[in-house]
Image 1 (cartoon, chains in turn orange, brown):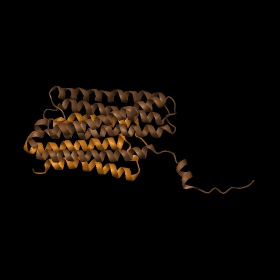
Image 2 (image 1 turned 90 degrees about the vertical axis):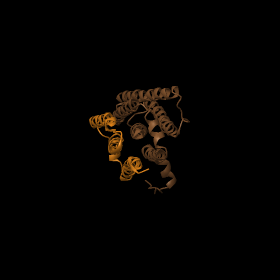
Image 3 (image 1 turned 60 degrees about the horizontal axis):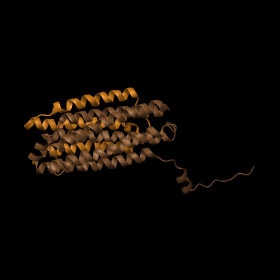
Image 4 (image 1 turned 120 degrees about the horizontal axis):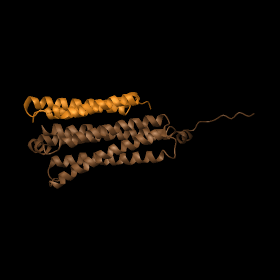
Length: 89
Length: 201
C-alpha cells in the first residue's frame, strides 16, 4: 500500500493542529452566530477527517471502492450532524 | 524429461492465498464508522427532544480537555505514519522508535481521558445522570475501548518486530494496525465537536 512521505505527513499534522486550535474560536452563542458556528465547526471537522483518511490512512491511493466508501462517510456524517442541528425543533 | 500438467484447484488457491490484513481492517473500519455515525445521529435525535438539558449538560464539559485530546491523538497519528514508513524501508530500529513514541503520546490521551472522567465522577456525574451524559459516556467510553485495543495492537507489532522482518509479510499487519490507530483518531475528530462544541449551542 502506498503512503505519503514523512514530510507530507508533517504538513498534514500542522493543518490538523491549527484547525483544532481554531475550533473553539468558531463557536458563537446565539441566533445567526450559533447557526454559522455549527456549519463552520462541522465543516472544519469534515476537512480534518478527510485529511486523516486521505493522507494519514493513505486512502487516496487505495482502490476506488474504498475511496468511495470513506468519501461517502466523511461527507454524510458531519453533514447529518449539522443538518439535524439546523432543522427547526 | 516428463512434463506434468498442473490442474488449478480453488482449494489449493485458497490455501496459497496470503492473508490480506489491510482489506480486512478496512472492512472493519468502515463498519465501525457506520456504527458510530448511527450513534451520532441518535445523539442528535435525542438532543432535539431535550434541547435545554443537552445544552446545559454540554456546557459542563471542559473544552480544554477536548482540544488536548485531539492534539494528542493527531500527533500520535503522525508518529504512526513515520513508523509505517520506516517499516516500509525495512528500518526496524526507526520503526520501533516511532511506534513507541506514538504509543507514549497516545497514552497521554488515555491519561487525559481518565482524569476527565475522574472530574465527572467527583462531581457526582455518571452515565445515569441524564440522556446527554448517557451519550457522553457511551461515545467516549466506546472510543476509549477502541483506543485500548489500538494500544495493545501497537505493543504487539513493537514486540513482534524483534522476531520478524518489518518489511516482509509482517508489513501488512503493521499497515493494518496503523490504519486502525488512525481510525481511533478519526472517530475523535467527530466526537469532540459533537459533544464539546456543537453540543453546547
